[in-house]
Length: 188
Image (cartoon, rainbow, N blue to C red; front, top):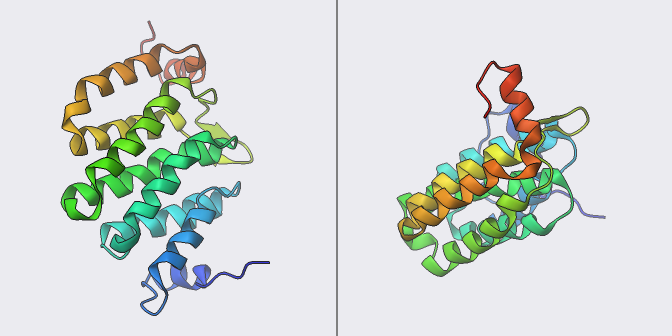
């Protein structure tokens, strides 16, 4: 049985102060585990919010590579919440890496891009919402990741445009086309 190193509920209640005494690797491991939780309150409300804040503040700079590697490995997982939060986590890492390039190597960004580009156009589950899992947004989170990759890997911009076009034309796009109709947006 694993025991959380951080009292996450207390962190939220106290306004997300960073646990200075906790090892960054342990914090990252706990956040990464929560980012695949089937419980949206844990995944969205706790883990993602905390990770976004602490990554942007530079609190997890020493483990950015680990965060990116784990996020990219989630594209091969069967759970939609894992695959849909993989690109969202990569966005956080890539945005931080773009502001401080020395924390992520070009080789790491290319490795993550390879995993992302294999997953994105082939993702089968394009639901935005699931009654038990909450918000998923694999397609939207993938588009956000594509934009983040375009900043960090400018030589991949044309490929990224093609990748996004393939995603939008994929048969599995029916869920978001229905969503566009519900919002009164044109569908071709």
